[in-house]
Picture 1 (cartoon, rainbow over the protein chains, first blue to last red):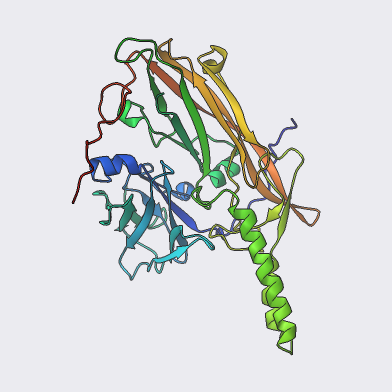
Picture 2 (picture 1 turned 135 degrees about the horizontal axis):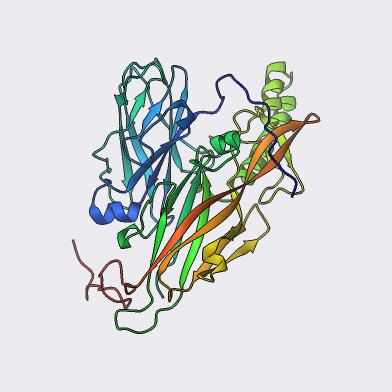
Length: 154
Length: 260
């Protein structure tokens, strides 16, 4: 196989792609323990910008004013229903809106960051699991944080 | 028969393509955390494989593993596998209908035509060496047709091989299954594990990612082959039922259905 190390030209401008925040959920463990602690792993696509807390419920995503955010879910068990029921955050920072992938009933949430952040802004994610009607919310809170250089967190 | 292990690998495709490495760009999961798998959700997963014997002392059967790759920042794997193809086609049908409608309504407005032109979208070719791809319309990460080659949805990574000590030492026997029809089926990798030799065994996963590049005024999916590592830990504990902690017999069902 020929070498494939050629680096394509990279754009220095902001990516047109949203910052995706993905919640990996172990629905069987969460349903068995009746809580999401230990069964929720958060990731985002902004690690190069300095996001931290990968693989925990306390993901701090580095964002800038004007970024589009997209939250979605990957269940670890494809036969158990998992859906992101709510994203609650200070409406002065962002106003998340629920959408579905066209032609499906699979939910994602999206929002635009309204202002640059000087300190982390925690928010709340709620999930519907299995046939339980009360949403599950992890004890740990994820947060949006200002871009590297602005934010003062460790 | 014991439950099969599912090993899910989440790839930060964008960062992996930029750095041309999977180092720091994979997150591994399995369904055996309850039994002692370590590093679930990180780059260093050690998948536990209990089971040289059953609780009654008899020889256990082999363990089956399945690997499922997924791309971070893409349309999630919960949408049907044929979604990209179906969505592209449905969009074409709608565009054709609306185009016919423009004429019937009398008077063709240029804005409408331009809007429909946008909906036609762009298509990308695949290279001969590209695996697990089909020539199809570009969709963005929210499932809409896009004409921008900046915001396209990354195709799911494709596993091309599994090698390493766990394979050469004949601890596991991986193989590729499925059909080369990438729209409706696709391939997957599974393995059976010899559970009679406890120990920690590393393995290497060979993965192909796909990057959209513009060449000779054409969009082409260029394949990028990379590798990452994980390990299996085979232990002497008996195989047991995750619900009861006992043997692998029937589940303790109540004799009559519970009523409200």
